Image 1 (cartoon, helix red, strand yellow):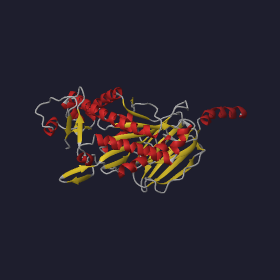
Image 2: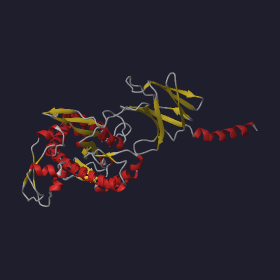
Image 3: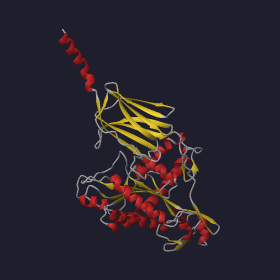
Image 4: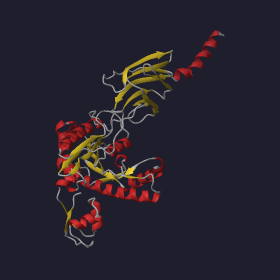
Length: 433
């Protein structure tokens, strides 16, 4: 009878034993505004989360879990965490305690396996006090009696943190090489008179795609460049590529934008949309997107021309795609695939400091040429530029005014035109404003 009882107890507890989750690793990623903890688990993990005060602590109970990996060391300058402790809680569970530097807003969620990771539990810690970001602040310089602002270039290093991007044959991660190139490019932009760089990420941490867009818009960027390193199953494929947003991508983004218009306060070129009806918003959005797509295409052309001087390009022309980071309706946006990291030769080049510098210089020259061709109004570059436009077949005076962001009357006055009649080959002076 005792043997039967023991057998029944064993059978009863088998499901509990089978549900025991192994934590094989823990990782900590620090971003400027939050900290992320990631737990690698053998299966989906049940957990409880609560906070304690005096002193500030965050407690994470991991149910039916055992720790097999190593607890990571905490960096001294961690934004939010003073100390990390892990201990057994009963026989089959764990308790993780975070001693905090300040009050935080925690968020936890589980992720299913993908091609790079297995099951994961993610814990994000956000500062309870949001840092206000001014959308209107732009450094200004004075020339004569005019206040002129810097041109702002937003540089986006793709991937980061838990999202390493593509991986080369020798173990090189896309997130690392594109960050190195982005930092070099930002340094060159900051050395350029009348220009200023903004890095969407300046470290190894995850940043959602739309937050990258938001950072560019918050900085009121004149150009957004997202830098990546491509990969393909055929290791022979190589070369750089430049992308802009496809028309279908712009259309879908416009639909999403209009759908949420009533529940959000957003801007297109400084125009508040909250008090506008849907028809007017649709027209404003369409005008803004058309101008942005045109500017994106022109910037991409200048960048591709310079990349061709560095090495082989994958495609001879600018490509279009529906990349999320290119969907800002009012910031010209370009995505650059610097090379195929899946190609052994190009992986070696991407790891090279010399090649990274060469790539950054090529992109800088493309940026320089684009803004020399189309300097944004109110900038130092625009004040210094003497711009002319030679009229091509099919062009109209109003379209030229829109292209250079001047009014039709200003364009007429600058060229002493009484009407709107123009001829092919005629050279117009473009006024600076």
